[in-house]
Length: 573
Image 1 (cartoon, one colour):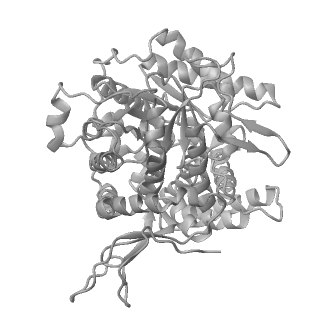
Image 2: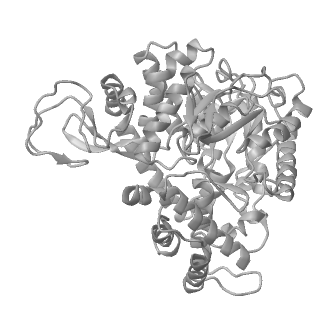
Image 3: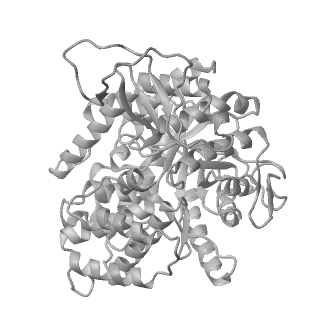
């Protein structure tokens, strides 16, 4: 059943004729109290999250900040147009005084965030959350973004998972009768704590571009619009858990995804300060780690830290979205910006090295932690050879990060924690960070960050097929409500699927050549898609037909969707 719930008990009667978002009026109209309406179905315990007070808080966030969010999304569009017309990102001359001022610092690690050497990422369903809390990692990135398919159930039940986890009441009984309980770190896999300890929770809300269609914001002019996914995810988690988290010795901590400018960071900072006032939290209680995962943000790292300086704990090198951002930004700029097979775009190619070196140097100069990214390799408990290769790949990746000065890193599977921890233990010893390594020798230029051709490599038929297969299988999983999927012994999420489909689009539109000389065009790729679809194991309940439509719309059409998930969410979830 679909219900409609307002955030307050009584509201003025709205005008009989509403206005669409963005429509103006030449006459007078009634002003109503801004509120949120719940239009999604209400499941068990949803009322514990969607309380009148929580909805009132969300409505206040939208009333104050939704307009700025829309302005910043419009600015993103202009930036994309500029890039398509040949204007490259640059270090902003108008903010040079921020970069050149050596005196300012960020707030740094909050309570419970001092040790971040191994962080485990994953969605917020109850089973995966318990596995993360029992993993022995120092931090659990509770992901409501790329590792979560944003079905209404996943969004609200993910909040219930976090609500229970914060209060120590989280449990899950699987359909096979297996009971999952939070017991904390095992004695042989605990990271800087004692057996039984659980990771500090850092929650990642959805990016600015995503909406929550099951909540409608009605503004003062009675205009109706979908709620912001970012404000919903952040607001519900902060409202219900901030005080309990501080009582537990940590705090309301967040990862901020897909920022494209320091102005977007400023918006988050304003939201944090307002929320601290509203929730009676001390200024600076909220801490954020920003994912530097767009080429635009790479040019504004100092400025992003500065805008968030009272609330900032660090930056993270979000490698997969960063690669996607480069493809998206320069997709029509010619062969200088065409990348090879995805597997050849490693963290050691020059333009990726420049990005991570600059991140570490920028962070440490400002007292911020630098957190490494996630290797996609995962173990397979049924295949020792696959596991051995995964551990070797992860060890090399984490050895490089620790040696470069990172203070911690991500893993996607509990079995990878000992390997990652060993590499950071070897460098950090008893220290919780290596902020003293300011990397003054690092000198990265705009040309270094934009030297995409330095990746070298080739495009092969196998690489094209891998992209087609990964995209189809991941999108199908996402449509079924599973946002993190193990595919061919790699952990795939929305970011890696975006790389796969955007590379296909770019190769077609550039008429790129395979290593054997054949040209890539839409008809040839369509043939590969048909072959890969025919080879997939099918069931009556699968979503591969829908996944094929999403793939075609995002990879094979003349227009390039900015994110494949936006239209897919609107149509299918």
